[in-house]
Image (cartoon, rainbow, N blue to C red; front, top):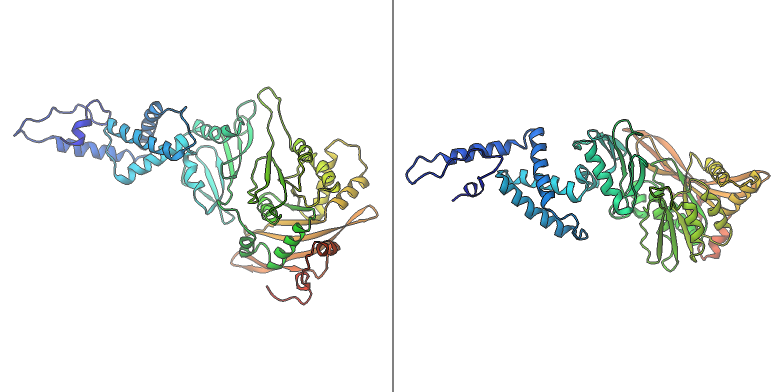
Length: 468
């Protein structure tokens, strides 16, 4: 007896099955099997039929699957889903080709234990950013350029389910009372979600993907983001415990650069990181990661970056790495840098190295302290030794465009000195050409490098400069 004859009873795909033919009777069942198979196979040819088939299979699967079971082993869960999936198709009497069967299973499994239609985009290493503008418009970024993705959600509720799946393990929520949320994926990728009524196009998700393996300094040199001389210089600055601020605009690569700079910290030092959503991927062994917490549904229990910065000072850190200074925590960060916590690293949004100082002054004022401007500038100038400014150019590439020393105060003005500057030489096929050149100025903190037994060759600063 064929598989079809064993499963045809009571199915939705095969209606009014004929009784088994007696020996010698005209065999009409194979024709019915072929016609039914064509109808089942056509289910994936039409978007509406495909969606209906996927929904029916998924609903039956969810009804039979124990969602309260241990979800720590995804491989075992996928095996269980595969068994239930095969059983549901057999009960439904659905005939599919091997490729269609596998495609339907991957879609159903992604909706149950994964991130739905986003799964293929998240597994594509060429995609650097994913933007969900409602259920039917999904855009991605590849090589700095935006393009429309050929996937879609079923409806707004489908998007909301995926948002909940992302944020639930982090203890965060996104609902009408709190319609915005920041979160992260298990690989550290940054996620922001905003839902109606704040969003008028439906639920919106923005995912900034991180590389599966953290980018190294060699990768940035290969991309042209920095030169070998600059890499050697920055490594020396981190080892010599200079306080460094990585500045730049949104999407310019500040967090990636901060991760690379943090990799230069010696392995025998205790590192405490403070972030809104944990994104840094440090490979040292002695790393403590602190993450903020939003208020609960009663509006209580929030823990800010400032609270964590104050707390980490009591944790005997050798290095403090703050993912981003964007408010009053800048004051506590500057005080930490000025009270023996050398070698601290952080990032800040700014449009230039000079603008970075103005942003820091503004953030300090947000702490509510009635401090005179000169006192703030003295704090900034004594706390920070180096500003590394990262920029996203018009062709989508990300490059370090300025490396600037903070030399101190002259009157009421903080003196800055550019050590490296990106020099654009032209545009070829839409790609910006240029090089990061040293200005020939040796920084005043060179003595601190030498005290750490680091002696950089004069060529690093443009003396007897050769092409790199």
